[in-house]
Image (cartoon, rainbow, N blue to C red; front, side, top):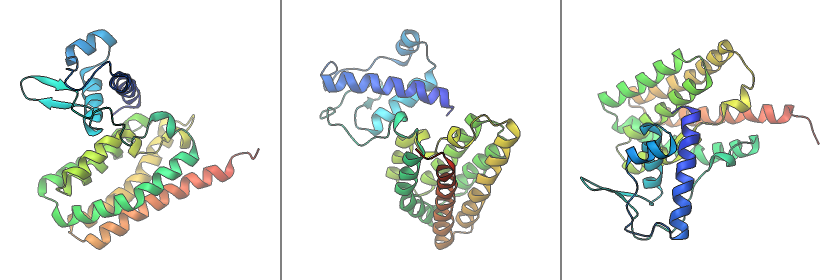
Length: 237
């Protein structure tokens, strides 16, 4: 999902979270329709769906077929979350990568054991999109799609839900690494990341759990190393 759209979705999520926490939207309250929100806030249906997906992942929204979306019982409980303003500094990105290390390795292991032909097709689509990307938003969207496809290949809905919950937070901010860079540099960076993705894909395709685990962990370690190098190059106070 593009960075601007993700930011708009963040705003909607925060707005509804506050209403639920304050009791303005108590359990049983119905969420506005997608059409009502697009008209009221001038956002796309894609933004609304992303916001509703995140709210559902946090246990703050439940859909009822043919009826709409509602606030479930116990929704005032504030679940774990990672907001946009929490991953704006390099130290924050490094902590997020540290948390993801084990998660990504286990997810790749299970994906290698359980993947289907449809899962492989989804992974290849994300690889191709990443290879063709020439800007930050396109590479972030492709990167996010690749990890979501791995989550889907596990066959465990909780991996997919947690990955969707993190959304674009799953991918460290490229703006920290590529500030002011041109499309050519963006493309070079995306292809560097995609080399790691291809190693993960190859292990999943051949159904080699140990290799998938190693490739996923190596991917996280290399990402962390890049951001530590940036951190070390920053001027000291």
